[in-house]
Length: 236
Image (tube, rainbow, N blue to C red):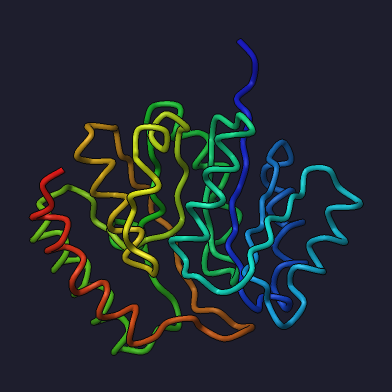
């Protein structure tokens, strides 16, 4: 049986300080993986950095978009390209080193007996580092809030470090995914669970970013507050 083709999707907006450091670290852990950076026309030149790296390494790809359209839209665009190009395992991660590349090897191991693997901050062995108390309360409280409304057994509903089997993404109507911000993670988990796919969580330590600026904002907070109710009472 041929080896499964793997790719890592990384959405970026103004990540010039991180992207050139992150890509080689990913390849140290999973040298067989390709990497697709989905860049939203970053003013700081992130796209240009990735384009230069791609000219030297065929494992690196760049998908450039016209402007900032939200995290969920970036992932959907990246997933569609990965499916079209025939990848079997599609991982997703942030560019700010909060998602540490060292865990990718474990994702590959665990997904042999799963359909989706989630890097979880909130199961035994998981943790966050250097977070202010307010952020910890909002994140843990938000996960409990969403989990209670949706009634699914995923501890870290908003975690964005994952690995998918292509069959899961093919079964989800990506064009109908409504969340543009971080509620995208919640919506994708809910749709996956509702279709009966096997979801596994592995513990990760999630440090706060040390370079670049966070993309969190009030709009993201309100979308995450409303999304569980929309999903719960959606007919289809």
